[in-house]
Amino acid sequence: MQNKLDSIRIRPADLTGADNDAVSRLVEAYLRKTEDEKVLYLGEAHGGADLPDRYRPEIDNPARAYENAVVYVAELGSLVGVVVLQQNVTTAEIKRVWVDPSARGLRVGSALIDAALSQTTRPVRLTVWDWRDDAVRLYRTRGFIPVESWEDRPRLLCMELR
Image 1 (tube, rainbow, N blue to C red):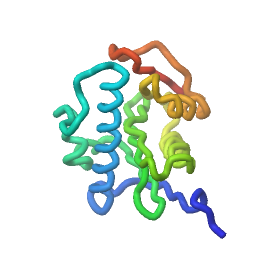
Image 2: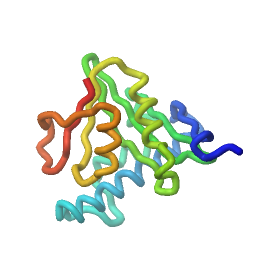
Image 3: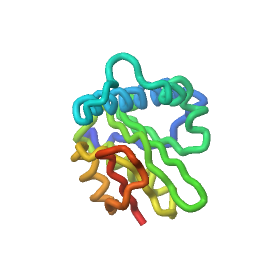
Image 4: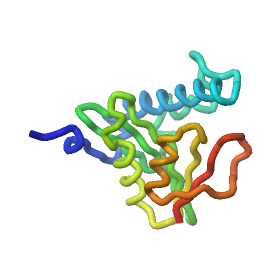
């Protein structure tokens, strides 16, 4: 008998075709959750139905927003997770790691991070809100360590894998 873990498939997203709408939905869920958490943890007056305009391109047109990135999706019957890897000459950055709540606890996030890390030999960096304990633990298991912040937003933890 095959378990759910065995059936997780991680693959590059087809943003010019079948995966575009699902990636849009997953990224939007990530952004909405983040904005709601900012209200709770930072007292910011965001959240609710409207996302800040700066996020619209990622939701409205992921293919264009991520044209210079590698996007991986996790498939478990349907698409249940996403990660974005942006690379430049010296570093890579992991962004928008999101696993649908229905697939949490199945190591989907670990599989997505591992897929992104397999694509680069450069130092990899990321940011994570310090209240996201599960995410911070996941990144630490992959060797990420906190580093001096390149961000000015409070409670945003900068981490790097060298």
